[in-house]
Image (cartoon, rainbow, N blue to C red):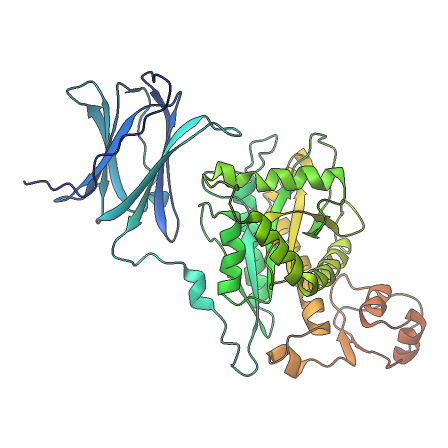
Length: 433
């Protein structure tokens, strides 16, 4: 059958003589926008890439290269690729053929070694049917709608090519944080007047700037990024809550952590050396004051809720220069749910009960913040009663008093409470002064 070439032959040459490479690894990831195929190489090489139709295929020839691994395809993550095979061309190049379910636009590039990866050839396939689109845009809130829901964007860190931190028993951060993010969405969606959207709901990578841009497109009222911490000392434990620091990290620990999270953009194949970073920083500094204030308030409420039923790493909200928290107009927090580098916490991170408890704690903190400071025009603003408080699991008299800026003694007096014991579900009257 007649073949038609859609993409011109592409050659990439380095300034130094190139040796034949060996393909040492292969994986495919699909996200709502594209399908990404990655070939691990032991060295940089020359390649050409083109597509064919009848049937739809993408062909990559690696000059003088070889392969000694099976090209296994995981159907769950295969996206547009239906099968993959390889052979040798007349000029002794390694030819790899991807069979596709439909025609696709192509993008490819070579990556230098970084983190745990060596040289890589990345091939991105974009559906021409335009049916793959970011689903989060569908959840964009109509801010003119009366009594609208508060929208919380939940971001599961890492994903796809970027596994995040890896625990002593090989638990991958990208897996457990997605599980926690899904539990958090369930918990938030169960709250009246609140709705959650996920920046990713599968095992694929999203560049850091795109994560908070997804929240902005969804017109989110809050952005929550979920992670699982790692440190060189395995005994370190507990949860942490971070906000953006305009002046950089607040401690060496936070600074190292921020550097680690920001470096994932390099792992994902996206450079951080944008020309407009300095200008963007100036604009962000001018516009983020109110956003940072709101971020601090909600982070404090989340940390308070987490203290009630689990260990925290520090008793205060941390701050660091996380790229993912740099939205100029959406309050943003980053939660390190536990230390995956601690064997005990690594095990708990994989347990459904821990994931659900973590989701409940975060939800309680988010709820407390929005009931204290509801956005105008929301259901919560119309229906909350600031003169009353329903006791939730983990609440304390001191915490409730602090939240409503009243004294513990006045709270006791208004509700005829002796001692410090309060029952879950009880309705407390909040004194006016």
